[in-house]
Length: 174
Image 1 (cartoon, one colour):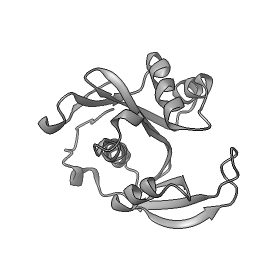
Image 2 (tube, rainbow, N blue to C red):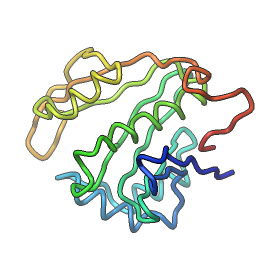
Image 3 (spheres, one colour):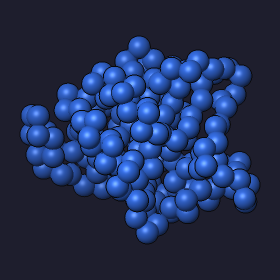
């Protein structure tokens, strides 16, 4: 089932929904804009069709895909695989909105903790993650194959879904 969440009026035109195969071409535009080592169309296709642990969402502004985020859910832990926003839409706190929506969805799925890796040099992202409750938990040496940069592993506890304003029986994005 596909449900849409409409943002508050100060971000009128901003919405979130589950990613479909038809979204992949637009997601690829975001992917190439955001990352030096972008995923392939095939990787997204496999995530959506073959990975039963994967959940991906798109963020749209006035009907245009401007960002996306994804995670794997394993037992009671969510692992953020990607989170990306077109460069022209950064600086509006919309990346934070996207991360919040992903965390809310993880909580709805009864995940208790959430993790991610971030480049040790990415201060902007690290500040955002810390603001959202993530704490450093370790280093993955040489994690990024483009330059051998280390990744900082970060973890956060997720509040119960009701603390996001969700109601029992409410399906959020699902």
